[in-house]
Every structure is written in C-alpha cells, then in structure tokens.
Image (cartoon, rainbow, N blue to C red):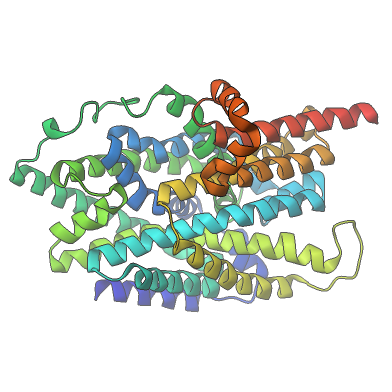
Length: 479
C-alpha cells in the first residue's frame, strides 16, 4: 500500500513538473540553491550501489565495503574546489558539450557514444536494485518487479525531466535516511536479541582501511581510478552542478554532499555487517531485501521499501535523463544538422531536441530494462560501466580544463576517446577473455605485473593517457 502510494506520488510529481522549455527540462532553469543541489548530489551517489550493492560488499568483506561510496565522497572534495565552479561557469548542458567547446563536435560525438554505452549499464543497475528490493521483500517474480520499477522510473523522468528530479531528491533523501535508520534499528535489535555477535564474524571483518580481503592496492589504486574518477568527471555529477544558480552554489553543494556521503557510507557498511551477524550464508546482494523481509513488521515494511526505492529512483532518474540528453544534443542532433564539420542545414532546433530527449528517455529506459534482465550482479555491472566511461571520457574531459597548458589537440582527444573506450569495451567482452586472448599469456602476465590484478580495468585508462598526450605531442611537432 505504502509503496503503491509512493509510486503514485512520484508519477504525479513528474506529470505536474512537465515543461515545454528545453532549458528547464535539461538543467532545471539553472536556479538550484546549494541545499537542494547538495541533496540531489547525495541522492545521485546513493542509488543501486548503496542500497543493495554497498550492503552486499560489507556483508561479504566487512567495514572496507564502505570504500565503494566513500572514495566517491572523497573525490567530491577536489571536484568542489577545482572543477564545480569551472563546470558551472561554462553554461553548458551536458558533459560532451564541454568536449565540444575544447576539441570540436567530432570529439563530443565520440565521447557521447561512450557515455551512452556506459550509462545504459548504470541505469540497468538501478533497475536491478529496485527489482531486487521490490521482489525480494514482497516475494514477487523478479522479472515482474523489474518491469514495474522500470516503468515508474521511465514515466516519471519522461514527464518531469530535471525540474521533477531536483524537486523530489531532497525529500526522497529524507525518506531514504529514515528507511536506513529504521532498518539499522531492526537488524541491531534482532542481533542483540538473537545472540548474534561480532565475535562470530570472519577475522578482519571490522578492520579499516584495509582488511585481509581488501588491501592497499584497492584503496590507493583501483578504487580511486575506476570508482573515484567518475565523481570528478561524470555526466550525472555534472548535471547536478549545472542546475545550480551560480558557481558558489555549485561549490557549496558539492562540499555539503561530501559530509553526508562519508557518514552514509559507514552507516551502510555497518548495516551490512549487522545483517551478516544475524543472517549468515545469504547471497550478498540479496542480504538487504531478505533482512527487511524477515524483520520488518507489515506497517513498517512498506515505509522502508519506499525509502530504499527512493534512493534507487533518485539515482536512476538522474542517470536516465543525463544519457537521454547527451544522445539528443550530442549524437542525434549534430548528425541530423550536419554539424560535425561545421555548417549544413539545421533540422533540429531546441524544441525538437526537447521532444527528441523525451523519446530517448523511453529508448534508453527500454534498453536498460532489457539489460537488467540479464544482470550479473550490481557491483560487477557498475564496475564494467565505469571502466568503459573512465577509459574513454575522463582524461580528455579533465585535460579540457587545462588544454593550453597540456597542449592537447583535437586529434589526441579523439583518439583517446576511441582507443580508451574501445579497449574497455573489448575488455568487457566474454568476461575479459577476448582481451586476454588478444594479448596472449605473456601480455596478460606483463600487464598484471605492471598494473596489478585489476589490469583489465586500468589498461583502457593507460591507453587513453598515452593516446591523449602522445598523439597531441606528435601533432604539435608536425605543425
């Protein structure tokens, strides 16, 4: 009953927030104050990866599971101090717009395609998390739960765009925190009453910052590069600060979000540990739904599910609208307008782009729903999506803010996007077996010795860096 009412409220908000103004639909009229933008940032961070994924990580390996979102919170510090004001100052709409300003339309198109591929996986992960929560707690068939969650996500975003996202993220965050506290209280009471104690946990489960299953390589190398960099350069993160009313609001929102993200990271890790103490032997990503289903009274269960679904929805709507806007403005419109080489007849204006964005919300949502039916785990899916994004887009975007100093050329940026993103996609095929087969045993052994056990995820970033700087230097010398 409560969950049904929550879905109805979200759809109503989306319907009432609908607009015919492109600027409003894409960036909420650039009128966001610091606190609403900060709440939207936090709500974007804590989606599928926290409600189900982070609890599952803590359930599987202990307190170090907090690093999944904690590294993102720490990455928001340099973002707030160095990049958020710069991004807001540009008055762009999407992340590829930044690439276009720095390098031209061809680089923006290549970056947009890489983002579209990666973000379909990110949206799919949100749908999977919502489906696991709804299906696991109310004992619904998973495919049916996925369909319900996907339909609500897509319709809400289709109607309301960014105004509805900014408007609802603040109270969804409050509902989400209430659900988290209620779940923590229920699990803790059950642990104390049932005799489960931390002594029954595996050795090193409460260790931090490293543990037997999570070492310094993950803390200092793998997580900062693959999980942290999307917080420095991310279409969903940038879309939040682009909704801010000015540079100061963007900076303050990001710094405020840091504090909340750090606190919630440890709270979710604690929840995962307590669930492990009370319910050993569960599949990690099913731990949270099964714990709520077993412990929450009927009247409280709906409230908790609505709060946790709010976290998933607040992340899903942001990623969905970001992907659709990027496809509309930076892929379809330039191709239709003949803008890649400059000039050409203009066929799609702002009004047409707005209509196209709404259509692409439906398309991206349908693709993500299809991907969600074959999910291989939320954290694994997000890691693959982040690898594709980081390998193709992060370094050229970061370099664009200091392009003159780094002497980066259009050719260098274009090849960095193409080679880094292509290498990441190749590494994702067949669980990495395709890339390993191309490199051979000697090549994989050499790369593992240099880059460590996460070499397949780090290699695209290295390829992108070499292409970005190497080809730019060659081009500069040639001229």
